[in-house]
Length: 376
Image (tube, rainbow, N blue to C red; front, side):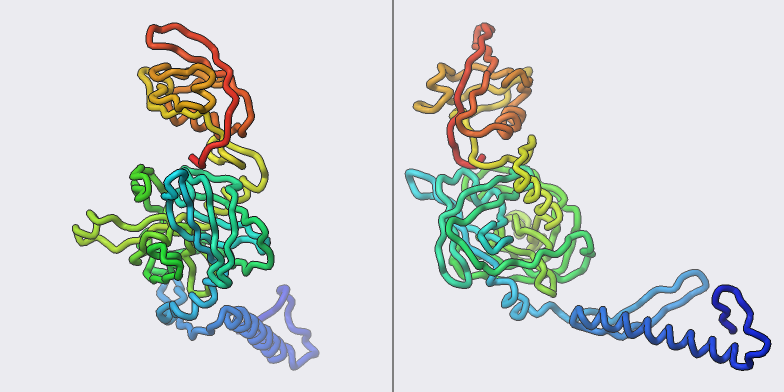
């Protein structure tokens, strides 16, 4: 077949026209193949491809990728991981988990449930053993993502952040974290079995339950303590934040093991929101502000004060057990969830106006100055 670039015919006086054009096409094709080979070679492997054709489609078929090399990938990722210990006063109880270093000066990505309710958070660098006190820069409890800042950290190895958008069912991934809270990272591999999974997760520390959705599901035996750790691809790029493992009931029914992770694209959206310094109904920025009450949903609406804790702001302002909060700064409070969302937008030392109804139906407005509380 003759190739006529631009639709122009070969010049009649040039006997080399067709063959010259053919050679030029072959040269261009060869250059294109070399460019493709260079790109694939940069990824570490140059597979040999075959084409399968029928009358309607042409499909690129390649050889299956080799099993993920857990030792090699772990060696790449572990220096950018940290172990997290969260303590609750006065008992010193808390949780052990993992974190992923995002910046050399100590911003660390982890799961919200690892630091939930903590009075103090301590972080240990896996590579050097250095210990740092940490503060919570912000979190999204619904997405189970938190961002920490390590005091005095510098020159930390930083994780390579990939993308979860390109993942496919069957891809092999590696979950790496502080399994069992022992301090030594453990890696478990498995294939992706779901890309939009929904679960109800139970927090082993306080037995609370939370619905999570949009998760990556992996056929890997993820263990307690790996929460907040890295789910990585075969090249060592972080594609998810480990958040949960299949429970005992699932295992007894022969389902699993399964691990679950928040996609890294979702996690980094939360991180960017926290870094912006702008709170939302779901993303809290900085220290947690609290009224000092325990609440439940009131009927037909509102947040009922179940316990007004002695010595904290609500108690000092005169709120008593059984009263119902119906508005905060004029914003209607429909239940405990909307109260938490309204408080998300505030910081300690802010003064808020609460519309309150007592058990007899009498209404009043109370001003409360918020104080510092543990991450919700």
